[in-house]
Image 1 (cartoon, rainbow, N blue to C red):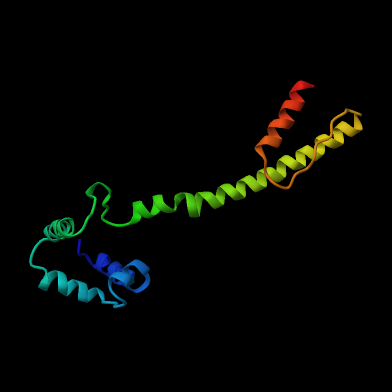
Image 2: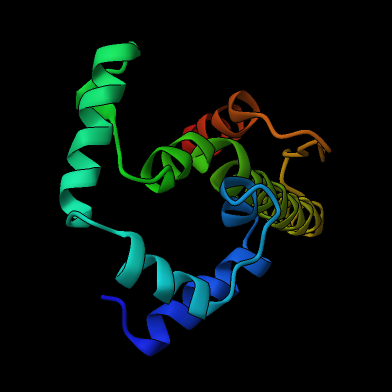
Length: 142
């Protein structure tokens, strides 16, 4: 776990990753500093330190252990899923799809005019499920 590449990666994360910068309070230790700490100062296995910290947090804070994660990755991913990633993609897809539907509706209007059919549908700028249902019902009845 404390190999050459891992310690270099850890030092790089402290320099460039905002999460590590926050934890390190802006300090950027070298890979050798991590190496010295692990080999010279660390007296117990890291797993024991982890368990001790969890016990301390559970005793002193109100932490629900069922939703506690080692890092914030899963919580952050779930929290942002609908607001930042999927919501933007959904809105963009809906807008593009609505434009395509209205283009097809214009084509249908031209066809009805050419064939002298008694149908004329309005072209809306805003998305409306009700309007689509109304068009579908009208076409089904004919």
